[in-house]
Image (cartoon, rainbow, N blue to C red):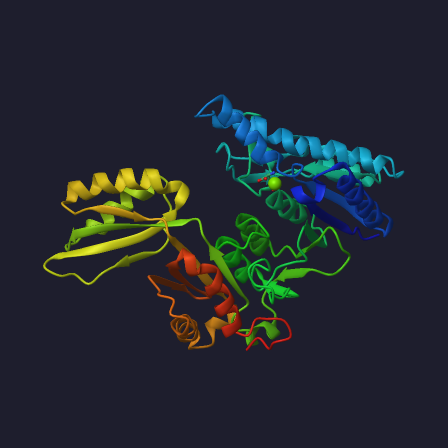
Length: 411
Ligand code: ASP
Ligand code: MG
């Protein structure tokens, strides 16, 4: 008999209260009764993780990262136990586990640990006893048996990794939206749910602000070609399948528009125009773990040039400290910041084979008199930094310019 394992992941909003937990239990039981072996991964109830972080910061300004992981992991532990109990009331056998119990081994980097190995032996044994297996998302254990967590949104990663380890036929990601959209439907009422999207596009979209799935989890899904189905836990409709490129996708130039409002722009004035200056600034930022996003250097005049770059707002204090130090060392001028920016991006695998995509995007912005301050491109995305006050309107304009709306053709 061939085994048909399915991994289902339910996010925090899907298990936010007892009624929702019961609804999830119902869905899990139905899946089992349709002849599947079911492994369920759950996130912490509702906003539990945020609340726990909040609590920690009420006790101290600098919580130990080891203890933070110990604390945050309790959120998912609540969910798995409650879901198992709810399933029991429906007459099915279910058993809950922490990450450590099912051999989710990570490195030692607390609060953003990396997966090292999964020993799924225990899960396989439990499935063989015809039980539903429920695993706490977002957590693992390192070689010292200390509890670790996988970074915010890490339950997605747990689910994808388990699906790969168990060779599941699909990894279903249940969330509070119907799937992956061409743009955030709260910003763009015409936004359309995509039936399919490629790993590459989803990876870019997740990294560029689409909040459906954790970017790291898609990276792993792509690497092992884990089929993913993003769908709503509140309806039975099909959601979005994330898979390898399929032929029909070649015709679609742009699949989605994303917006990030959590970036800030830093400018260093009068940087001496000679070799090694950028290396010093960005080298020191990198050493301190600051991820620099877009970089623009102006044409030099009188031997000096202005250099601008963006970082996430959370990194602004450390960025400023380092940049000011390096600027004074290399004899550059003032360092200023600008938090009134937003980054708008378009993503699409078709950009690989179609030209004129950037021009179309810039023309649409120009017609609306929206100024572009920075631009960066990759093989399948184009990003522009603009004033934050125009951001929401710009998303609608670009969404329309590429015909992404409902019933429209996506050429
Ligand atoms: N509960 C964790 C978080 O909120 C993990 C997750 O939801 O995937 O980030
Ligand atoms: Mg959560």
